[in-house]
Length: 68
Image (cartoon, rainbow, N blue to C red; front, top):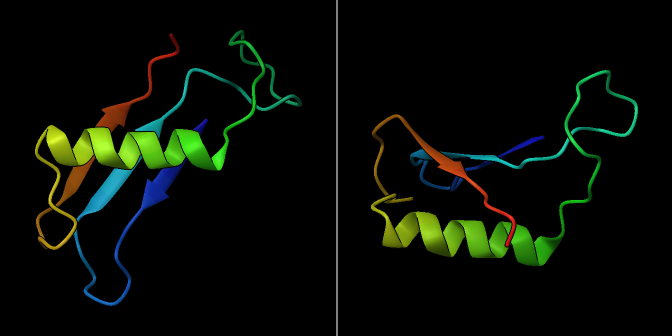
């Protein structure tokens, strides 16, 4: 499952978050799961600490969410 985050006001850099889940109706062999707002928030904070700059207009930053 994938989520995309971008500051609309600035047309800023895109953050693409990949979660290790598939949709319940998907034929993929990944486990089904739910993406919560707190998971998205953690992903944004982690991506910023890893170098994603939401105010930049430079491309796409890839982030993989890891389940603990």
